[in-house]
Image (tube, rainbow, N blue to C red):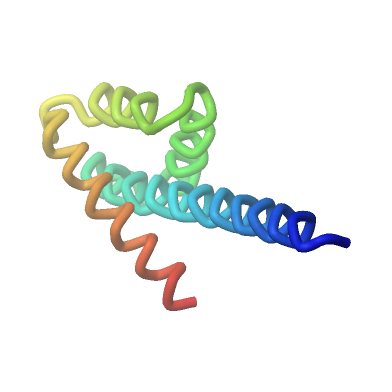
Length: 103
């Protein structure tokens, strides 16, 4: 293998690692926000777990988190506005990144 091939393989490995890390951070953040929303809606135990699963599933409909924000705003109704949901999601993304970085 040449140095160029080694460098290319290293970049590909880093890209794969970074992509996986972002996916795990996003999924963990959505789970945190879903648990927060379930608590606000008075869901407990199995209902809360089902809501978390439904929100994680909603996250796969389109790239980014807009699908999650729309679902949360619709589900929470007057309990939380869009700005509150976005702030909570940003907070959860930061917390998830920190948790994953710490191991």
